[in-house]
Length: 419
Image (tube, rainbow, N blue to C red; front, side):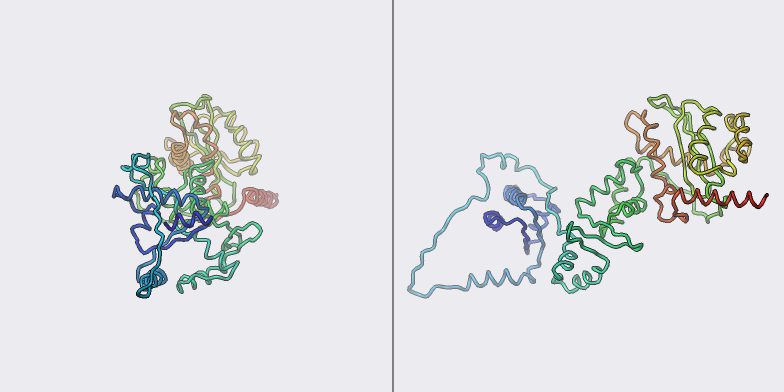
């Protein structure tokens, strides 16, 4: 009755309060409606709620519902004087459709998902910023007043922002917007199926915020089928960190080949040539149909030298394409130390081998069902690695261009000293 009256009065935004926890949670979709006689009423209520632009319902304990109890007691206490007559008009209203209608034919269905959500968490901060209104709950009012110092409301765009620790403004998202942002950042374009902590850091770098972002990111990653299917099983105990052997960015690179990969891609690619910087852990990878020394030289020119400068040394295994005359002459011409790992033990090149496992695991998450588009998805994999700009705990949080200039400057200094 109350919902129909509000609908007839033309109400756009409605806030409802009830002392029945069962009914309130059924409207929210948190509880199921199991009784068949109540299902038609529940469907009518949801249809009316869908006509409102905004709807919010909250459970109020019976002992705290003083205003409603006072109105009910006032109506019951009113009594007409003895000997007087009053005419009362009684009207009937059908709350549900007739039995022969379709709504009762679907009475066996148990709705569990609705569009009714809890109140937007941004509203208390917006009310305090614009109107100076605080919640009635004293504890919540103190929390809103204390936390509001880090929020900024733009009246022109009607958008709430939160200041991060580094001074950037993060756009505050609603529950629906947060779910869409999680889906796009995790398995959307260039998502690469990051785990929970990395997914949260990626969302912050995208400029988004909501209070439960950390827990929601971890929960979303746990529910991803591809992540659970191709995740690593780590059974080895943790070890202390070891110092890196590189003293400057882009000074030393580890290079290796992944493959042959089965099935080959639709373009005939069967191998992956990958190279990783020892200092910054920046990675580059390209698909290849055949691994020749000329292709390796071209790869180093276009993906390493032209972008990050001439490296000091390149570490690789004893593959024929790495110990050939063409590759050795190229390294001598550019004064690059051509370092090979231990013979008959390619795993000695630990960084390159670790990157190979990582890139194969990421490819399994992003390829389609036919698995022949892995060469097209290869460009998305480095974006999901912790050393390519998405790890919050990395030590060297600088841009590749800046690292390149610092590396070039260090090599120039060494050249002057040797001269």
